[in-house]
Length: 358
Ligand code: A3P
Image (tube, rainbow, N blue to C red; front, side, top):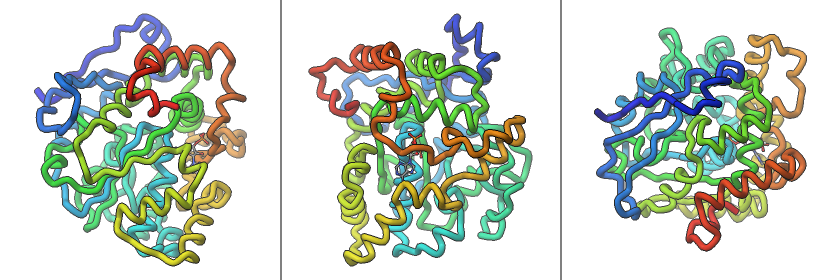
């Protein structure tokens, strides 16, 4: 059996999941990982917290065709995926700012396991239909036909751009023999925790507090947990066709990150073009850019959940603050300490992995 589905026994989770709107979480163990090229001796991947709906697509993803000219981005959620997707897509598409403006990012660069992205007719026009595109808002939700983004992603013309949050064991088996380009982005755990909380409130109708969310994350009970293993496993892949980026470095030196991405994809642009790209990727610009800011997701979701008055709240925006140290303001001293302890428990200070989590 490729996947095993394990009910969550955690007593706090069981007692309060409905109240917090977490009810369909399940731990998924993948048993088909022998061909993943990884430097971890006796590696047995941990079960991952996903939705029950993964059952409908897990095997299809495992068996899917992978193409040599595919471009994949993998991240743990809230690590700067959208920002890096836009960067990659533009670098690989001759800086076609017009198309980037006209076609939503989620149509250009679909989210593989999010079972709703767009309808089966992948024409630009179809993506303009807000009703259809934003029909369902939480990852891994059921969708009536004809919504089937996985099928659409599979059928995209080459070169395909594919986003996923899945850990290595869950990637298609063909990935490891075809070896397409892979970009991995990581982000500091405290920033991820805060950003993930706000995302869960605005788009997954999470009803718990920040404190409760962070504690669930530390219990490895949010989608795609465990977080540390995600970063460690990707850092240990024997996979030369991978570029590893980090949110904090991108913030510190965006032009440097752009140059790295250009080198990785063997693209070269003039200084003027690179400056235009950096401007396009600037936080303020991206926040205003309706092709990437997922404003309609937020609007639709708040409407559907009787919270339309919150549509302009800063923390409801997908492109929210884009900071590296906002957590200092948002987390209590107690939570900061708990998060640091969580990381230290899993990654001792003198471990070679410690730098991944700074
Ligand atoms: P915050 O919630 O901390 O603001 P993902 O795309 O992986 O879901 O990550 C979302 C995070 O990336 C959000 O973090 C978002 O604001 C941030 N982000 C998106 N575009 C950005 C940009 N151009 N510059 C800086 N941060 C950006």
